[in-house]
Amino acid sequence: MGNFLVTGGAGYVGSHLVRALADRGDTVVVVDDLRQGHRAAVPAGVELIQLDLADRRSLAEIFAGWKFEAVFHFAALSLVGESMRDPLRYCIENLSNSLGLADAAVKAGVMRFVLSSTAALFGDPEAVPIPEEAKLAPTNAYGESKLMVEKGLAWADRVHGLRFACLRYFNAAGADPQGRIGEDHEPETHLVPLAIGAALGTRQPLTVFGTDYPTPDGTCIRDYVHVTDLADAHLRVLERLEQGSVRYNVGSGTGYSVKQVIEAVERIGGRPVPHSLGPRRAGDPAVLVASSERLKAETGWAPRFGALDDIVRTAWAWHSARPQGYGDR
Ligand code: UDP
Image (cartoon, rainbow, N blue to C red; front, top):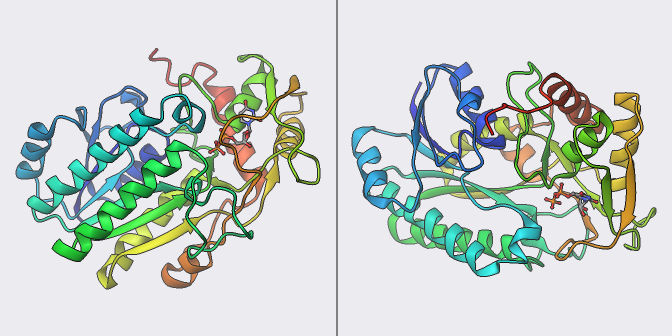
């Protein structure tokens, strides 16, 4: 069992990886500035260091104090809509924090690095499902910022031998099947928690962003991947890094429209999702669906919660049990 550094480990996806590592007996150090993360998302026995990644000196001290086997880097700005209002902040902050972290890792001799990347790299894809070789052409500044980070890591590999994995997440959704942790963002911008919140009456009615896309029902199609399956992908790529750096798409391989997600929430929750139809959101591609064949073939990964209903069921259980999320705001 090893020592691992997880940045953003108090956040939504990161906390699910932290549980998976802790559950199998690894030692985990979480670095999180707690702007979006939650102390209560980090289990007892895991050290949580509250730190902004821009604080390079403290970061170097953390690396000096531990002998990490790998870094899992989740902490980042990650909202498409916000990135289209403040693109430079996204590019500057995501690039400097991510590559500053990689630099600290290399200087400390930690040569395995797993990056949370995104399907937003692909922009409006030429074909779906999207393989890793598809053209990289982000339609939003968030995607561009992650693309720049991926490129920086490739140079660190070439020059320093840093082994990195870029995991291009499609739409992370769902909650820990044991109900210990789940999604709690403020502001919340993601479809599944907003639809569930609207149905539970804990949030405003949902607005559907665009009904004139070239899709069967006119709403955007996305590939929703369960957050526990995402965490599992991280554990598997770690082993794969022995053979060199990798880039993988991580999704279920099935696309669902916004309307289909609303229907799933209504079916599982047994309540209507109050909603209205609105205009498109800037930067949203019409369809994003992953081909995760490379990840499956090279690591043996397969989604255990691959159906949309599994995602909605675990998310519904979390939000109805914890209508205020972690209750720390
Ligand atoms: N969406 C929506 N209403 C909302 C939030 C999201 O119609 O209030 C749509 C959004 O346009 C996209 C899909 O739901 O097509 C998933 O969006 P989300 O923000 O959850 O994830 P993203 O695809 O941006 O990573």
